[in-house]
Image (cartoon, rainbow over all chains, first blue to last red; front, side, top):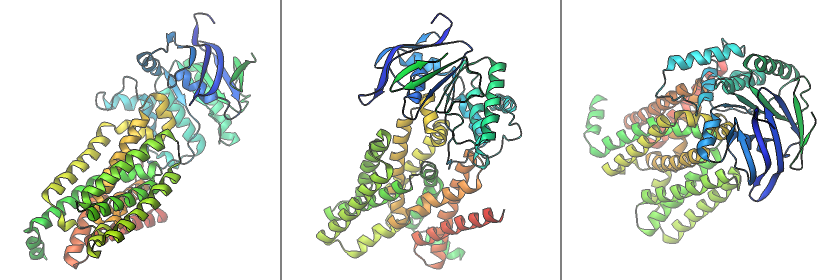
Length: 227
Length: 270
């Protein structure tokens, strides 16, 4: 784990309500890598992402992201600005949100502020992002009217609008049909090559179509490598 | 007709009632967006029952039923918000626990203390004509709190409603926002209890929001339409009741149901 590590976990243990989920995990991910972390449901994959994203503090060990040790809230806030997150698809969305608004929400906690920044600039960023995910023309559409695959592409746009150095995906292809899955994977791969972000995907699926640099397996709170 | 309206508005309590309905209609329907988006329909029903218990306690113990309703609903919304945030118990279990307990408590209190039937009826149907200037100011403050919250935390609320998990990962104070939503919901329901009664709270809070969410294609429009439909319910209900000599709460509820029905039919025909 050298200086090029964008994510560095050393002997990290964490859990919820005194129940351990991850035990003594050590992991190093370099700039520009594509990493898959496999594991069954409840194995601690999402917990690992929460640790890296700074929304969970380790019980022991150390976490550093983008060469910043996540030892206090200020550091955690700082690194969050450089992380994009794609979560599992939302099955039943009741709220009326346009594609444009949904992507714009990805700017939350960055320099963006609804009252301070010009709306025109925001719209331009959204426009460019939608273009990059081949969703231009959908800006005014209600996300409730989109297919699962389209909604997940919008979620990808929401993660990318932050220009993240690190993109984390939590079960990105779950509930998608095989065509939408393939299309999303292809898009992620293209964008990774174009934008040079570091990619961490956690999934219970194998995602063989993505050519990962490293893959790991989480089981019983321990991380096994399979480079 | 104009004479009837003018003579009605020359009476202070009628004016208070009108302004209270307008304020309630314009602002409280925003809370319906939260109820629908976070699937809190069971919880809002529970809060209505808790409000009944508070009002019954007020009547039985000889203090204000409004104050009783506000106190009970606020306490319950704090407790339920805390439990939902901690995920120590599911929303439906919380509802079952509070709703049955509250209703049982309210009926027992009213039966044991022998509260007159008309006063009990007021809790169920509302008694907006008893609204004082102080009540009107309080209604305004509750409405203002709701609108200000949506204005200041517009993006945060949107994120929490859209994807709670993502909001948490991005660093949005999700628990605080949900807690605040529960408190506002409690205040809003207690206010609506006074306006249209326990049985018809949905008319002013939930139905306008449901109609708005069926028409709107983005969040801003959903909020604006919700306020607009709420206003139509309030004004339509008020003048309908005045001109046709009908109970206000029921007339407003009818207008509300009509708006939702029309929106559903138009959506179906599209």
